[in-house]
Image (cartoon, rainbow, N blue to C red):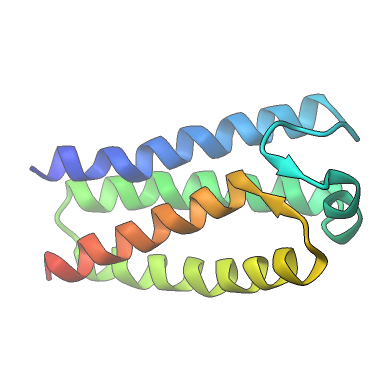
Length: 121
């Protein structure tokens, strides 16, 4: 069962790895899933996007490993820290009316991971 639960964060890690690759490959283009990207590129510079995407990919992969090892309390703490950062990101997106589906999907995966960790404590 733990292997099945770990698929969710691993899928998010793969998604953010793809986002990092596309962000690295194309400098100032509109990636699919980023709405009003000219404003999004203005509020979140490219280097910061790359750092956050790599960090999210690593954190989600670590969450998957923690689920496999039945270590739900550290997974819950990591998920909650990621959600705090994600809530600020959602605030920025809503206030500037620009949306990144990769970012929102990562926040949803972190929320689901936190719920899984709480249910398995």
